[in-house]
Image (cartoon, rainbow over all chains, first blue to last red; front, side, top):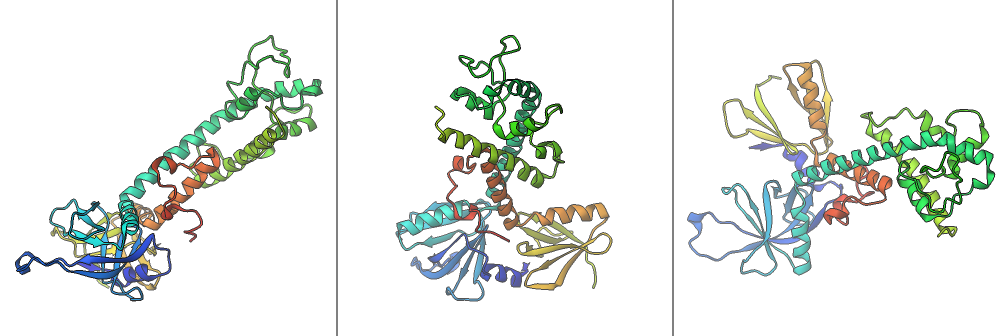
Length: 270
Length: 119
């Protein structure tokens, strides 16, 4: 079977970082009809793992690999060979030959087995899909969190504009926690000291963080000024497929919020 | 150049090609460090970084099929997937403060580290 060997050799030897590399002894496989005797022999080779490809070279400085093992549909297991520190790469396809490799020591063997077990394209693809889902979920829950501040902002704004004493963030840790993670459920401030309830005592979301409030302070009459200008003007919505923009946009907002929260924690709020 | 009809199969980061009536592939192209280019109508090519002028050309039955193949092949390399993984990992970490790879026990793996694979 033909292969674009020149390109493969280039990939094997170029300076893109290898996932693992080192000397291993490779068992020489003999065809059944040649195995008159049972002596097994091993050849020392320089192995380089890049992605799902395990290359082996005659020498570390060789410019071309001797061979290549594609690590798909295989298992890597410790080997009960006569040799110590031996492990084998075996394929689901029973007809395919196995590779028995011997490392220099326990640590080297463990490192190789670990690196090779996670080398397949399929494994990488699985992890990528899982992370894609997680990111989507994180974006969605973030989008859900953002809806409440808009609704509560005008009432909070009115409250603190008419009562400047409310401007500092209340000292109840419960409110601080709720304020940044679950806007919608921020109700029931214990003691209620910091936020006198003008709307008849039902649960109120906590006040907006200072960064947003300062924007509000400057524009008394306008509708939702307490939100940072970036949020209002953002062309990006969760529905957009353009993930890269979405990522950097959300990322900045979250990073800023977290910094502020952490600073407040340091300033001695219980 | 003569165009020959082939059955072409993308499996992980390899593009196999077969004579239409045979079970064993004639050959394969490893799709790492390669560039996929739209050529003329219905045609795309694959070339490799160390030999950019050598193009493997493929003619499709339709423009739509051509675009599908181009999209699929661009995403077919292990290196592309690795970059995507690192990107998602970083984004999730920024948003949630947690490293999503910890649950798999692979957060220390060299292959998943940020900064190692800038391309």
